[in-house]
Amino acid sequence: MTDTLLRGRILSFNRAPLSAEDSTAYSYVEDGALLLRDGLIIASGPYAEVSLQAQGTEIIDHRPHLLMAGFIDTHIHFPQLQIVASWGSQLLDWLNGYTFPAEAEFADAQHARAMARRFCDQLIDHGTTTAVAFCSVHKTSAEAFFAEAESRNMRMIGGKTMMDRNAPEAVRDTPQQGFDDSKALIETWHGRGRGLYAITPRFAITSTPEQLEMTGALMAEHPDCYVQTHLSENHDEIAFTAELYPQARDYLDVYERFGLLTPRSLLGHAIHLKPREIDAIAQSGAHPVFCPTSNLFLGSGLFDAAGLEARGITSGIATDIGAGTSFSMLQSLNEGYKILQLQGQKLQALRAFDWITRGNAEVLGLADRIGTLVPGSEADVVVLDARATSAMALRMERAQTLEEELFVLQMMGDDRAIVQTYVAGVARKEAGAALAA
Ligand code: GUN
Ligand code: ZN
Image (cartoon, rainbow, N blue to C red):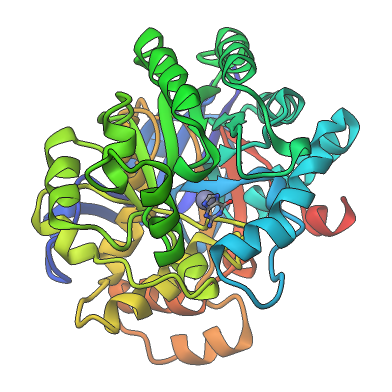
């Protein structure tokens, strides 16, 4: 049993803040402490109180920095880490031109393992302690992903992508192969350590009805797994889907009719939704996932966060590397703020930081384990410095309130603002680690 006491300013949310004045939605302790033991937070509160329970314990003093729950990224593509910033196209051309060739390389187990290490380094450097990842179509890539996460004791969710048409052979499976490989991966990795499995049909265009049928069967056999896919990101994608599935009422109906619309469904993008689709998402309890940097990069469109929220739908927010242009959830908030601005909506800083922590945990049904600093939670903690760059420090000279500080982090922050990332109680961010890898 080794205890660690982290000292610093502590911020943790208990529900989504309704406004900038909604101070009962979170707890903030100016001179606070977290007592960590065996991967869990066992006490949280004022330093003067928590330190009494921690006589003789190693103290790591992070003052004046801010401690929050580790960030959660609810949609990211592991095999796309080297195609970020690939020039010039929208979704379907981008997939064919850059994505599928890069993903084909993950058939090689050695490449997959090397990239899994660098992928996790990037997440940690950017303060992300849980991510929900698409692996490539190859079983080897998911094995590399889960093994690397396990070696760092990270709570990671992922799955082998299933895709059996409209892609080069090197990144295609078959309905049977996709089913068998996914099932074997679930048996090995789902619930092993902190790993959880997401059944992963890429999207309607790259799966035949036979494959989606088998995906539904897999989901029925493993209802505690997640299912992740893409929905209504781009107009050409929607038109092609309608051609491929002429019987479907709309895009969402393709997934619905195969039993893929559940409270554990994560629907990447969900930008151009029809009223019936919004109704069905609201009724099912499924979760759209907002991917701001990606939506701007590919020119896909503007996510209607307020419209969905008004229907009682709980959306996630995510980076969507490699169409997304940053591993940083802070940068996702920055661009998310601007996307909402274009629609006359607001992304308040308190709401923003709730979203990338507790909110995303709630989307995953994991808010009792991650996303907050409540005792009993897993000890995934990020240490933030709102003066990390000279421009941020300059701006901070005029910041008066916690909300202003958070807004500086939201708009100007990136990996430089992440002083340290604790995963299950262990400090994992090493200076220059991602560069050296
Ligand atoms: N739709 C299907 N596959 C992908 C992908 O890899 N990235 C994005 N942004 N959209 C997709
Ligand atoms: Zn995606």
